[in-house]
Length: 177
Image (cartoon, rainbow, N blue to C red):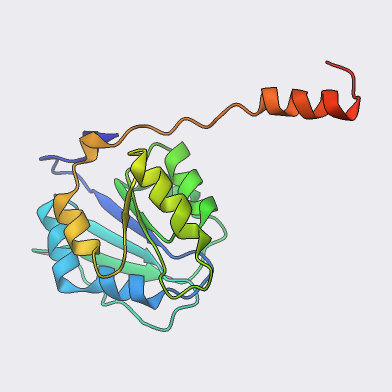
């Protein structure tokens, strides 16, 4: 997981996704000069932001001596963007988190602190405790990027639900297959 950090001169994309919601605080944070400088200092060359329903428009740039920045609102699928990314910065939606982890991509999850009953933060914090990802808020994103060591992340292995399914089937009286 950590082999994307280093002195590679090829295109290194940071893909940011907010899902289908509005998360302008995240878009503003990644568009700030301090976060873009932190990403550039880590060797990233391009920043692609999926901004969802947000109203804040990031600043596009070509990236001559800094990060190249582009954005879009929605896509029928973000899978190709996730696959081509060297780093993913995501909202705390479980679908985005697990899709990114299954692809083995380094991930920073940014929790939307404005959501009521924010159960998503519990998932992000648990996975961060298990060293599968980094967890940040819009306010701590720059420091998280500056401090991150991608080689310290552990690959995520989805659990095997077969024993649970067999137990439920047995309980319900269905025959073993």
